[in-house]
Image (cartoon, rainbow, N blue to C red; front, side, top):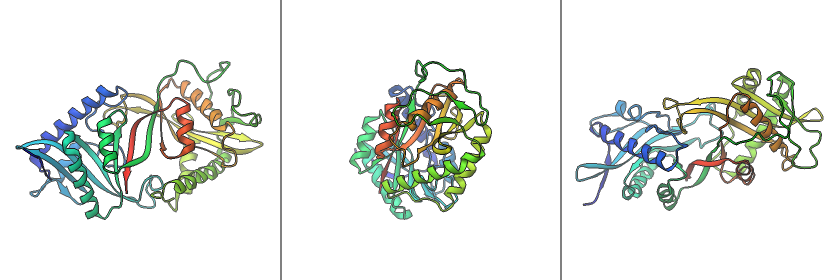
Length: 359
């Protein structure tokens, strides 16, 4: 007996949730670093929970309304696979407008028997065409080789890497230094520079006058990524949004901060850092429950790349997080960025989720 692909109906909800729970259990069995929540639907799907995605959208014809659609694979009256879709349209003012395509179809729930996956992906692509979205996006745990291969065979390509660096035994610094005190203008003792031409560079917490320099370098980084990835467009208000974000982080200093690398009075690089507590109720429960450090944005002046400045910044970030008893850090980078892929893996970050794109 072969399966058929059909639009899911409200009566299918228990079966769909069972598929999600089984998938979550298998995901954690393969990789204990990941969440046990069955509702891990990473951004950009705005559906945090399966019920939130499906139940309010139920109709006589099935689970499809507006920007949402869910398809089930059925065999002999049994649901053996499912795929849930969200039609994302980003505006210039949206927070991730410069980081993801402006129009795309995001795959949320994607679970069930591997034999159903090619047909479910084909139906997802058909729906994306109906919605007029040129791109289809899926998030896959790196250790799920079967799902990675199914996505690759269907034409998905690497897009973003969600990477995690777990607790390391020793700080990066030699010799040890006192815990960082978050006072504006304080200079952080750092490890010896990686390259010989950075002796004047110091890393410190940013003050208000440093924000414009960090924004300038951040926009350089945006332009570099847009040149690498044709689906990315820099939002018209990105510089202003970035400035507001950096100002807020710099003023906080406790749960977030902005670190800058300074040379001869000029900002030559920066990291923006955040403390996050992730649990199964979190909007994006990507990882196992716990406290994490997020490196949200990181960049070095294009004229100073390859000089060890990024290593100095990371050593300072490591100290800042450790002072807050945080030893697990995560970040996202564009996978085909030749600089980021080498830099972060060299610091011990491992890819645990992959965002893959078709179109």
